[in-house]
Image 1: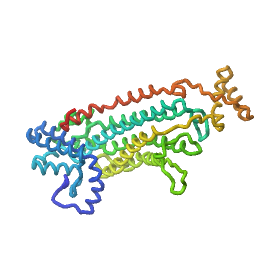
Image 2 (image 1 turned 180 degrees about the horizontal axis):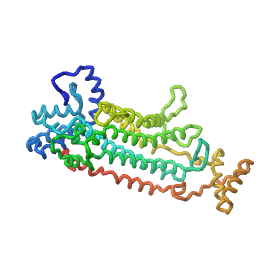
Image 3 (image 1 turned 90 degrees about the vertical axis):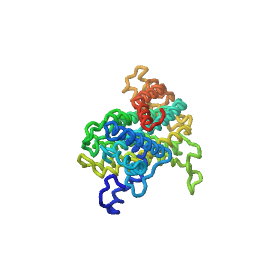
Image 4 (image 1 turned 45 degrees about the horizontal axis):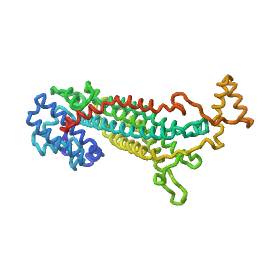
Length: 446
């Protein structure tokens, strides 16, 4: 069954090529397609295109299908082109002509647009929850190891003293930056395209404000051409969020791989979190973090892939957009998996103690010596030159004490302030209002 089916049959090879992976990927959209239809039929009744009894029948059938979709999953049967065809087929099979009425006033174009926005909106909510779990794990480790010093590097050269508290909390605060990006993306997604039809509206007196409220959108995409141009743009913005968070996670994974190596030995993990070698019995490999690094590197290429899929397209719908699902759906899943495994593994990391007592790190304290001379009244440039001469002639005696007290330094990590920054940012998401609207639409208690 195809929503555009006419009096002729499509060539089977052409059909297989054009359908592509839609049947498989559309299973992700099933609950959202049903919710979009629930809002649409309520609106159709409000403008007189459905009788009250027909609305009740459609709502009951759609809510039953929704429950199946969220609990058991829904597949697109052979012969069905996509999830939109599948849902309409099931309704028509149960309700006859009443099921055939649900497509009035919409096109597959705005139907898939609203499905995607509802799905993407839920994915961003889930990603933000997973980010919060990782954020909490990082701050927990930062608090636990705030006094354990760590060599800080620039140019791969030992540079200045750092600490594990500073290292862990740096990534926690970086996640706040990523959350801000996700919030901007969420607010762009949270506008209703339903009613734009094929991109040029419809001659029915549609009440788009009603469907906006029913689906929990904060506003609607008013211009119908603009609404249609959201296809591709939404995916591109999502790709920036995915790539940005992947950059944070990938750098963290790269640090871990470096820090657990024998030449550094800054971190260790329980044996059960590492893998071995088929030939070298001593090996304990950080495969999880190497795979994280590789996955995150791959995810950072996603914006290029999305932008190239849509490059040069004029306004209006194009079948090219179908391939966006194949890029963005797996990427969302991979990012969630990366967040989950990091949240699981990082609390098990054990930092090494007394690292800076090693003689190789004696020059880490050169800046401390310079600053002490400045505090005693010597101009900074003279102090810098004096300590440099001591290092060169072998007379430098490092102080080996760190006296950093300013905000965000080793001695003042500002962990409560970083947590407050997260909380302020998280408050900008209207998750609760959206969840309430969705539950009401689905006929569930809130």
